[in-house]
Amino acid sequence: MVIRFKYADKIPPFLRNKYFLTLTIFIIWIVLLDTNNLVGRYRQISELQKLNKDKEYYIRKIDEDHRKLNELKTDDHNLEKFAREQYKMKKKNEDLYIVLTPQEDRKIRNGNN
Image (cartoon, rainbow, N blue to C red; front, side, top):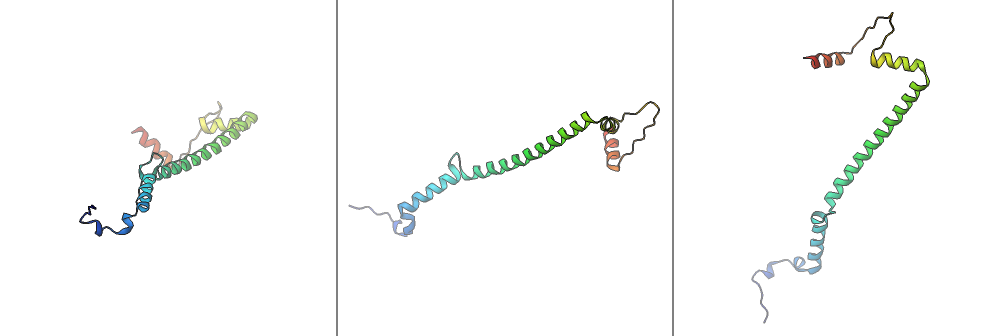
C-alpha cells in the first residue's frame, strides 16, 4: 500500500531529485554554515591584504628611519640641522624665528583654547 501526499505531484521533478537536494544542502553548508565558510574566508582574505599593505608601509618607514638615524650618527652637520629644526635649538648669540604655515597656526590656536 503506497501512501501518496496530496501535493506531491505539484513539486517539480528536479526538487524531488536526491542528487539535486544533496548538492543544494552541501552548497548552503559550505557557503553559510561551516566554520570555514566562504563569507568568512572572503573577510579573512580582505583583512590579510590590508595587513600586508600595513606591513609594507611599516617596513618602508623603518628603512627610512634607519637611513635617517645613520645620517645623524655619521654627520655632525646633519645632527645640528636636525636639532635646530625638530627641537628649535639655537646658539647663544642667535635669534630664532619660527615661521608657521596657516594649518600649523590653526592647530596651535585651537589646541590652546
